[in-house]
Figure 1 (spheres, rainbow over the protein chains, first blue to last red):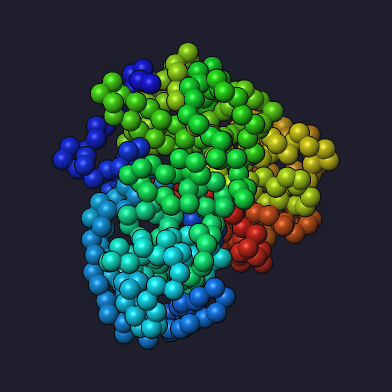
Figure 2 (tube, rainbow over the protein chains, first blue to last red; figure 1 turned 90 degrees about the vertical axis):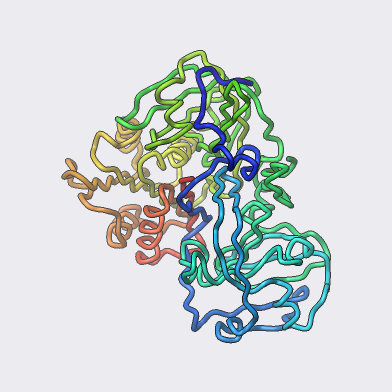
Amino acid sequence: MVTRGFTGRGSGGDQSGRIPPGQHLVENFPVLSAGPTPNVETADWKFTVKIGPKPVKVWNWIEFNALPKTKVTKDIHCVTSWSKLDTAWEGVLIEDILADAGLDHPTDFVLAHSYDGYSTHVPLADLLSGKAMIALTYAGKPLPRDHGGPARLLVPHLYLWKSAKWVNALQFTTRDEAGFWELRGYHIYGDPWREQRYTND
Amino acid sequence: MTEGGAQLASWQSCVIEEIVQQTPSIKSFFLRLSKPFAHIAGQHVDVRLTARDGYSAMRSYSIASSAASSPIIELAIERLPDGEVSSFFHDVAAIGDEIELRGPLGGHFLWPEPAVDAVLLIGAGSGLAPLMAMIRQRHALKPAVPTALLLSARTAEDVLFSEELHRTEINDAAFVLALAITRESPVRASDFGRRIDGAMVQEIVARLHRKPTQVFVCGSNGFVNIATEGALLAGLDASIIKTERYGG
């Protein structure tokens, strides 16, 4: 349906192939979260990998930072319709974390958990092959609290609610268990290129 | 399990029935739905504008009306500098125009039904919209739970829904209204002439006479961070605070 009198800013010239349907480009970095911003000191920070309820390995900040680090530059897409191009992150790839924990492929599904009680569902296949990391820096600086610092999950090929801020655990599950937003009307997978915003999209 | 009704929200066209200039920067748009829905106060709609060349732009707007006004919903849209969609609404949209939207959406920032205990609402600017839906929804329920609204605005004329809020305060003993006016002196002794802080939140909680069991905060990210820090300093628990941050 054409909206009378709407011309829009246009689709951003040569960037157009990088902006998924229904998204618009931003230069700033908007912040969206469901509750107060947690204040987690790196001295208290811990990260756990679990299979079901059972912890397999726990790292403190120093131990985690000793894992191999990887830099990526990615486009990111928020379900509220903004996209940001060429965001630069450094962190630890999920396969490097699993290798350090002596794990290969315990189950097909993962729930990421956060310090504020948030959780989100991601299939394991979407976390491997360099597709995802626990990010520790953004644009060359320690990750700011507003953006999930000290550490957040980064799964840039899915809508950004999957990239859990203030992450503190990855939990392997046998089923595709829904997390916080997936229980509240948002899509279980969340592919921006297929516009999977809400449950039945 | 789904807490919200988002799974049923399909695109529909609606017609602009009325436009009201509410403050120098905010207009209300009253939209008649072609496929009426009953929303929960706090939910939003996604609005999609499409140009002749097929380019489309989508934004989310909170619903400011309560379900009682169905099949007409009210959106309070603030003109943003360089806002692609908000400028369209402010400069181009006219009564009778068709607009495409889907909703109701969102399953977290929701008025608790049934509301059984005191509620604290904190908002700034057009961030009042979903809180206003809650105040209007609450008004329809008798007896209404004790509710306080702490609303930040630059000046008195920037206060959205000012007349209705003052009327509600006068007619409803269980509703507490306090304005935090940041760029001029407040007129009423019960208002504040500064930005929101912990002492202010504490004072509002005292006026409620009961500790709130749910807190809703809506505004820009900077505002929400200040307001939630204030709520935490006032001794409220992080787990009862729900936030909606806009931008982007």
